[in-house]
Amino acid sequence: MQYAATSRFRAMLAGVFAGAAILVAAGFGARAEVKIQAYALPQGAFPHDVACAPDGAVWYAEQRKGAAGKLDPKTGQVKVIPLGSGAAPHGVIVGPDGAPWFTDGGQNAIVRLDPRTEVVKVYPLPQAQTYANLNTAAFDAKGVLWFTGQTGYYGKVDPKSGEVKLWQSPKGRGPYGIAATPDGRVFYASLAGSHIAEIDTATGEATVIQPPNPDQGARRVWSDSKGLVWVSEWNSGYVSRYDPKDKSWKMWKLPGDRPRPYAVYVDERDMVWLADWTANAIVVFDPKTEKFEAFASPRHGSNVRQIYGCKGEVWVPESGTAHLVAYRY
Image (cartoon, rainbow, N blue to C red; front, top):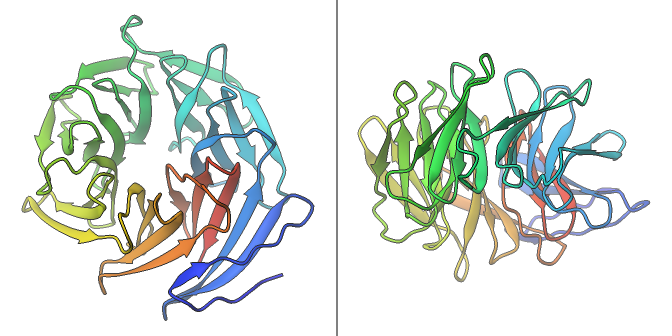
């Protein structure tokens, strides 16, 4: 069953069928209709990050169970696959090979799961004694995976050779979100350091880029189709945009009282999606009109830590409610 909602800030209507999917339809401005479908995960699930794959599967980092979660959106069925002893995956992305790759803080390693054979391959950090608190990853234009570690590290894995390299970040603790632009440039956000940085993918050197807002708490980053870098500012409540070409910045404050944007993602239309913890909502920003639309979760304490999408849809993991939610437009 579908319900129409037209108010700007929507309290989503919800119905549960057999403990599985919830389907809601809502108008999104004058542009399109957004259909929202929530998928209940097994009891006790804690989905940290999520990634949709080209074959239609949706993977999530099952952090507390040390596993990979796989959702079939057609049936709502979920499969949980252990990633190894002591595993505690934080981030997940789908690589050019179609496989899910995890940043695993528990194993202090990058982990690849073969989607067909379910064989797990572990790429441990070269300094085994160094705990990086691995966070997120992104692939550059050459298919090399770059990752962040919140204790003050960033690094890379070359899937072809299996080589893993690690660098200390220029300003210590904080590297968190990371993203690649369409032309292969790689940027990361430092939450504790309140800055972003660009990694020279040839040398591994990172150059700090300071946003205009001091102590803004840059948490995650994403690139749009033009190579502009979007930043969710956890402390300031702003979403900001950095232009690598002229090194300019623009900033917009999210609506509401004390917004706290955690995640940021830019879809193929260059619409900017953010997770606002204060509003318990997904907020969409249109750079052309400079207007926001908010989609409130009907579940209290959704705690969306990351956003990821495939063409025509955006996926969010509600770590606080054990749901994955699809926004289809």
